[in-house]
Image 1 (cartoon, rainbow, N blue to C red):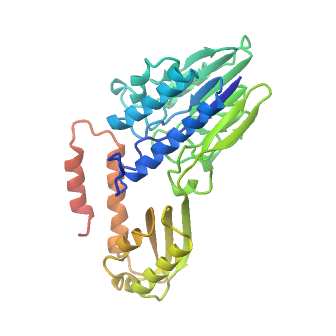
Image 2: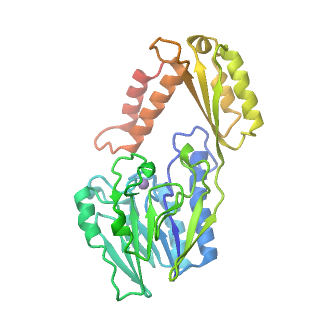
Image 3: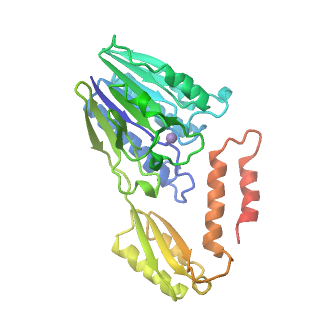
Length: 370
Ligand SMILES: [Mn+2]
């Protein structure tokens, strides 16, 4: 039995990015969609016996219709046209917080050869000589425990495979402190011939037979050094191989110390650094330390937006000079992140009965300096 395991496509993410591409979605959303499509191209080329998506195919509970159509087209291609039996589980990002809302992936249930697993309950799926225990994201720890207790390998089958979305226990470095994150005890993972995990975005082995496939595109700076792609898994004996797919480069320019410098000098230093790393097609974070009130006051008004033209995306973080005692924030830069953070939060929560646009407008009134 040969399996392809991929995960965390987060389709729809990147909507706060400013430039729009040909599709009308943002260029960043297009990147994220491309990662998902490239992974499916590779899986079709590898022609496994079974394909697994271990959760968070969508970034939000309610994706745009256009995003759902893209997801459906590719799953149809994989399962119905290429006839690769495919199992997709709900993750914490795309599982609804209220059961009556239902999971977006449920819409794909009718696709031939596709097994959709959502709704807080384990589903056992037999394919050939292998039993797949597909455990979607559960709403509560109690529900998770009840369902995990049902995950007992059956010796009737040559292989038993567990599919789950969450944090492998005892590995705090893997916790992304996400809302609704769930912990999977190692003793329940170790019983299986293979465990296909989702949630952690950098592919890695976490227990004797348990692997995270990682995400199909980089979604945060903590993923900048990790290649993106999918796992090809041979069972009996277990052999796991990573296949890379194309993804956007992410870099971090760390600790440019600007103590005692004026804002216009700082802008020039950042510009030179960006030239050195050939930043045009990359997502770049710049950490500037030793910033004083004087640095901010002497920074030309449009400097950040002009620097932004030099990268695909640019996030400049100014860190205050520790010897400066004042408590006042950093105007544009600090506030800029606060309002962006709040909008991101607004987009990520269910706002039943509220108008998202009105809330967004009101919030910006209070959080923006302009
Ligand atoms: Mn997740």
